[in-house]
Amino acid sequence: MGKAARLACIFVPMALTLASLICIILVGLGGTNKSSSTLDSLYFFKADTSNVTINTNLLNGTKVDDNLLNKGVDALKKDLNLKGFYTVSLWNYCDGTGDKVEHCSPRTSQFWFNPVEVWGLNNTGAENAFPKELRTGLNAYRTVSKWMFTAYIVAFVATLVEFLIGFAAIFSRWGSLVTTVVSVVSSLFMLAASITATALYAALAGNFNSWLKPYGIHGSLGKRMYTTTWLATAFSLGAGIFWLFSVCCVSGRSDNKRVKVEKTPYTYERMPSPAFGEPSHSNRGVPMQNMGKSGTAYEPFRHEHV
Image (cartoon, rainbow, N blue to C red; front, side, top):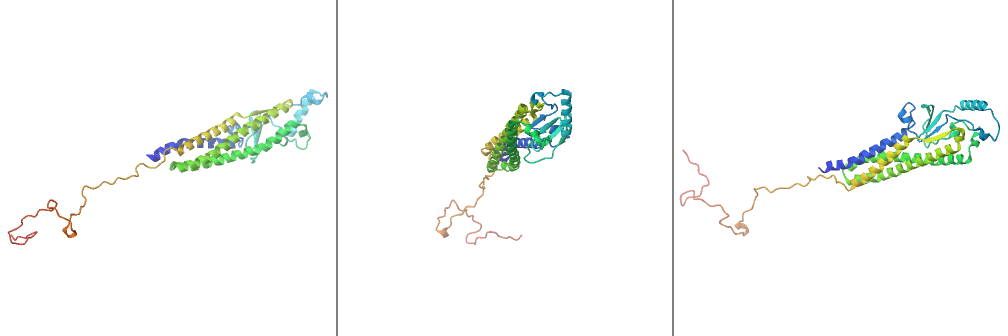
């Protein structure tokens, strides 16, 4: 009965831990398979470059024919192999045209999206045309993205360990205590990773929309990715609360460990003996019966011949 109640008490945090682990895995798999529409839709940030143009107001009053300008932009996009959009995930980025993903970059640890490198603007002088504020924002993004990546990895490992050692909590409260400690670590790093990702890419999208909007480039956030990462955080926090509760819950010990030994109705009792100076009582002895004639010896059993 005790272990059954303990198992029921552990089921809820185990289920929440498993749900959190699945969500973290989905965050890590986002953008890793161009053939999967589900994974393609999991991204932190999207840069829409399908309407790239050159704003004539930025040419300092220089008169340029619009048709010539458009042809120049088209030629530039072709030379740079500029795609219609770029999505940024945890390990890499993907690009494509329209709604179709055509290419995903190799997975890289501590990945960050460098538009200068991805758009082929290296050593062209075009990167110097970026406003100072945008370059400062990209440098900050590069630094913080490394911490965000580390936080997700630690959260994944801690959640996996939490789920594995959670089975030990079925048998004792000490198992629940150890699992609770690991759960605190996973919850803190999961919360930190989600907060960092949300703030980081919201700031990046703001920079893109502020400084690259005149060039027809628009930045946005991936709703499904943030829904997944915050679900992982909610599940992790909920699991931690229930793990803590399980420390004070049913112990898991069996209630049938005490065995009662009943005294048998027939027990040996020593009779008093005159040899040890103990008085004998006539009412406790066995009455003797006259087994034969007077003057004859007592025979406990006589064989008679027929």
